[in-house]
Length: 284
Ligand code: ZN
Image (cartoon, rainbow, N blue to C red; front, side, top):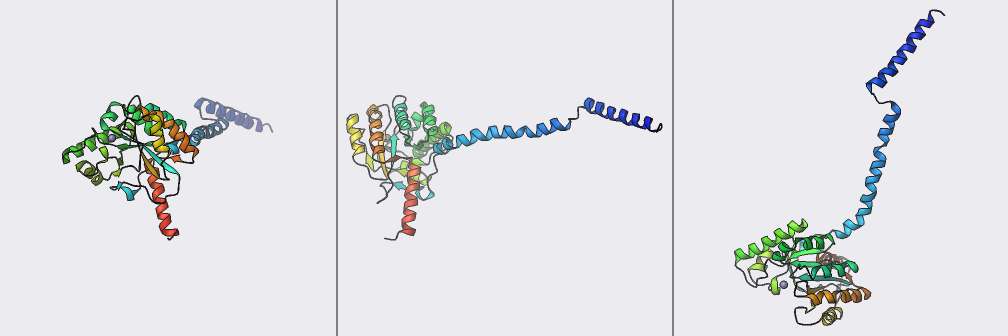
């Protein structure tokens, strides 16, 4: 038995030395190590939660691409018999610091989306308005740089390039939609846009807001004419305060009538789906 004491003493000493070594070497003891491996779990959960909450906002803000079937095409009229009560409001000649914010506010208040055909020279001057419109879920299209009625082929390229550059700088996306100034589809500007793959978009309803008419007449022009799938021409230029004044009534009354306001790419997607569905499932 006596011989055992030194052995036990040696073992105790070794154990103590091992503990001291562990403490000195800073090797992490098991329990804290386990705690460390557990730590990332709550961190992950904390990151995942806002990401999930962000999803609805992100998806409503993302404007889809224009369907490939419409690229390089001009849209002059709505699809016949389209049944969904969707409308695409379009605002040309902006942005402007007085009218565009009022338009954006009205759209926000009615959870409506629209399409802005901006002039490159205005997008250059007011990029924050173009950015805000895109961030609020609206589509941004090109309406040329200076709104010319006629251009040379070289000037047409320049008008499109400069405008696309300022739109991309403000929104991070190149425009896919083009509205020809004055609705002129013959000539170098529109030809070049279509060749470059833009979708040229005219309108199927005019608010006639470029005429000297008041807000109530503009509102009447839009409210009393729409069919499902219509594209509405309006303006958010400095010279069109009556359009901003008319918009709340238009949104209120047409929402009450069951219409929803969507961007042009969304409307074109809906047209395409309905036409595709009509061809394959509903022979006439
Ligand atoms: Zn215009």
